[in-house]
Length: 180
Image (cartoon, rainbow, N blue to C red; front, side):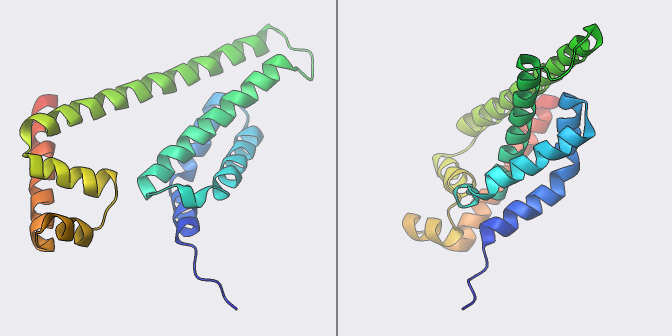
């Protein structure tokens, strides 16, 4: 008997292939060693493979993969610092400090992304109608289908799509205006 295709596994694999180069560069930047970077990528993929059904949407897969690779790289650095296998000299210590600085840079980058998300949330709260806010939340955050949203709100599916399109366009234009 053939089992049905595993959509979550296919999505995870496709996401991993699509952003694999970026993940490898992240691991290499933190670890400074190509073999360790490759090992970290493999470990991240294997860990997430067992949890693939719990990752709801493709955007989450990218974020979860990136976070997992970063955390595994930092864990590797900590293990190396706590249990050195060879004699470490000052140069190695400097490299470790540079790698921790790279990890700090990633954290700053994450903070900037979060600030952008908060800015978009404020735009949504202040410039969209309550209906548009509800539609965005249900479709983009809760990942509900257009049909389910339309049925629950007593709307036509085409009207849901149109309202979402207008809401996204409004937020996009306001965000661009603020950035310029």
